[in-house]
Length: 331
Ligand SMILES: [Fe+2]
Image (cartoon, rainbow, N blue to C red; front, side, top):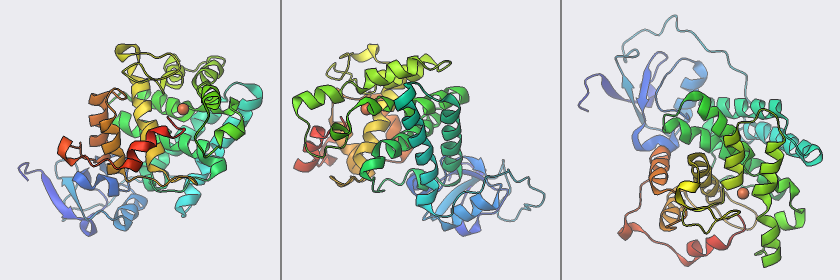
């Protein structure tokens, strides 16, 4: 380690008052959504010690070292979170269910509820990200859309922070991640929950959800336009083969490109009643081969954010099953 201010320690040596500089490639194992922060609460210390991270790097110029004193450190106020991981995730999922259900009858969005969910997801991502980003969680058929919305909200927020975007913009993008699929409430349940491949007619109906969502968001007072665009364009592809408008390259905004990556990554890595989930690295390898779909620069950044390797050509091992995933209804 060339920087004399940086010191690698075992996680058992971690103490309140240390400034965590990073976890290296162990990021996915980290219980925290951010990699640089001061350890300032017993909850954070407990989460670190209970994680599978083995080492961390601390910055001695910003916090105490292994021999320093942690006395007198302020402790941030925290809303108690359920101890059970599934329980923690259930809270925002239930809130999203309520937003979607209300929107189905009023055809507009309860902004206050949306802000409340983003707060809960935000807090969970700081204290218990594994409860949100548990990439192998089984999604139950009835809850898929709600759980997916929460996960995409979290991923977009995480990615936006990694891109060092302004805090206000991170928040707006998180809202966009949460609401990108809101139009699905207008899709008949039998199509939405069909596990077999959709017929051409059913696919046409399914592909109306970005416009349906956009119309709903446009009726919601005070929502930034960027949120609507994330919803409208999250299925567009850079080569013009996406929907609903077949936009190309620069016609697709950065926010829509970001949510497109997070949307597909979550769909690929989650387990559903009708498909297994891919590992994050397998999902990354698949996404990297879909030339023309994603913004390659952002995709590379996303992999960095998630601690995943950019697959070299020789490293790609796309199985028949992986190649066939493009037929799934999610895309
Ligand atoms: Fe969608």
